[in-house]
Length: 144
Image 1 (tube, one colour):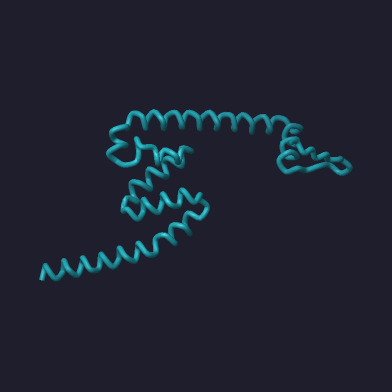
Image 2 (cartoon, helix red, strand yellow):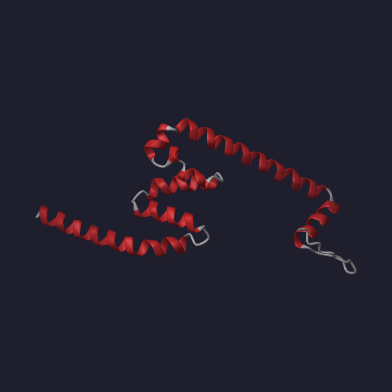
């Protein structure tokens, strides 16, 4: 009976795997439709190779840190290499975190300046939304 159960499980698992492999590319493309084509190929490879949990987590961390290129860095391509190069990865993550913290601080300061100065706030809004007051003339220069 155990042999039959194993054979039955193996057949069931094989069928699930084939279905997944057939349907996964379309699901991945739909789910990650806003990603670049090169990213889709990488995501598909990670998922279909069965390394979706760890690989996906690493990919999300790299993306969150603004460094999706870390996914293809030879030092970090798989678990063994990531462990081997953990100090380098930690340093890279800390540098990116520091850069993000500086960017956040600059953004906070910019928001504070806009909050404190209505004239600067109006200028910012007008520039970003390309708004003009009635009667103003706008000259568009084509710098080549």
